[in-house]
View 1 (tube, one colour):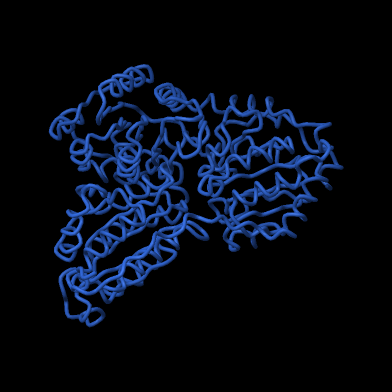
View 2: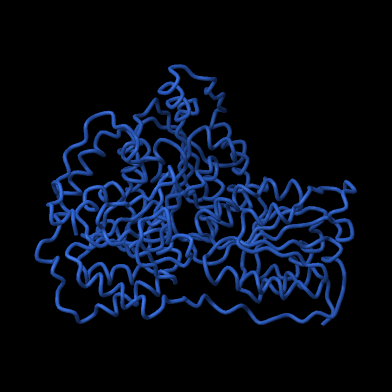
Amino acid sequence: MEMTGGQALARQLVIEGVTDIFGIPGVQLDWATDALIDVADRIRFVVPRHEQATSYMADGYARTTGREGVCMVVPGPGILNALSGLATAYACSSRVLCIAGQIPSPTIGKGFGMLHEVNEQSRILRSVTKWSAIALQPGDIPRLVHEAFVQMRTGHPRPVALEIPPDVLQARADITLLDAAAPAQPQPPAGADIAAAAALLRSARRPVIWAGGGVVAAGGTQGLQRLAERLNAPVIMTDNGRGALPQRHPLALLNLGGRCVLPHADVVLVAGSRAMDALGRPAHAVPGVKYIYLNIDPAHTGAPRSPGLALQGDAAAGLNALADALQGDPPASHAQAPLDLDAVRAWCDEQVAHVEPQRSYLAAIRQALPDSGVDDGILVSELTQVGYAATFAYPVQAPRSFISPGYQGTLGYGFNTALGVALGNPGRRVISINGDGGFGWGLQELATAAKYRANLAIVVFADGAFGNVRRIQNNVFQRETDTTLHNPDYGQLAAAFGVAGERVDSPDGLAAALERAFAAGGPHLIEVRVGAMPGPWHLIHTFSKAPRPAPANPLGEPAPAEAAA
């Protein structure tokens, strides 16, 4: 039928199952946003106050709902503002579609100085997406929207982008809409590779599973648990892999506990993880260990990682195939000499106990969120002292219930992302933790929280400084540049936006404030006055110096036979 390019965009998005778009209108998008009025009963157009929020919100929405997140921004400055959210989505393997405006198609690349023109906009978008395209005719739009969803649902899940110039959105043509892209079809590893990996695991005396964010993104948590229980193998979860196995599960460990068990392993299955540390080194390298790498992306199975058997395929399909291949086998020989994981957890608790007051604040947050493992509350972490500690001191019992910026380490992402989480999960409790430094990146979005009545507790730990930068500078240089912050009165700030607010100064005070926030519903800002906190880096990175000697590995040093395995 005849329609404008904007109408084709809106109607194809409906067909693909989109129910929410996070965007900011502008002149190059007028024919798209006008067309959204016609489908307003099927697509909610959420308008924040800054383009950076659009992509962050889409990312948080995607990672917690399992559905694709969609953002829409004008060209040039709009896209440049949204890049940090797209980069975070890329780092965290998040399915986000960015609908990007363009300058008029006849002027692209001409350097005429059109409104919002930036050089090589398409190339810029390619740097933070796995696929991007530009529609140059109205009839291109349904096909390219459809392909965007195909790309998000196949291979490595990452953001994609579609640019549409304003003249293409306005032009009319006879346009054929397409059927929706097929749901994700898991790509299993080759059968011969599964058989080889199963044989290695079957013969292992002490296998260990290293589970990353790819397991969660692929919906592979059930397969992971089946395989782990079949092997009686400890599961070490990365930051993005938190919740792949409930932390209360007797086989569940975090990176810190992995330091104890990896030296005793003879076979390590790395599933859905890049398995690299912050210095670009393999995060799990142990001499003499045999490695199996299960990953949809072959780039994450090769050097500089230790050589091993590579299984290219979907993490969920691969884990289920391995569990099936081992089903019915007699108990593995390693069950005769299991590792004492309770001792490992006690060892971890002993070290975590010194990270105060972060640990107590995280306990208050955990207390405020349900942890049934089915309808878990959601914590959106941030680059703040309590957020850093959350990577090892906050129990996660369900997938998609703990959100971090991954290796991108995007300061200021947290509050923006939490808005998308809250709007995508209206029936769940959501807590956003922030430092006063990072919160300054997006505090204007209090207006968005108020406008859409997001059921969100916004916690700001205020110490009046970029605290981590201050610590690093003093440790390295014994002096600092100006890291102090001039903060607003957060109570008055919240009130100015029509948001409830209060101030506390202790973990008990935070626990009580969170209960009041969720009892009242809607957005609630809680300022927590804090001072300097101890650095947790020695519990996060193996190359960081500990402030005190660590207790000895409770499992002892591996026996010579184990070390040579």
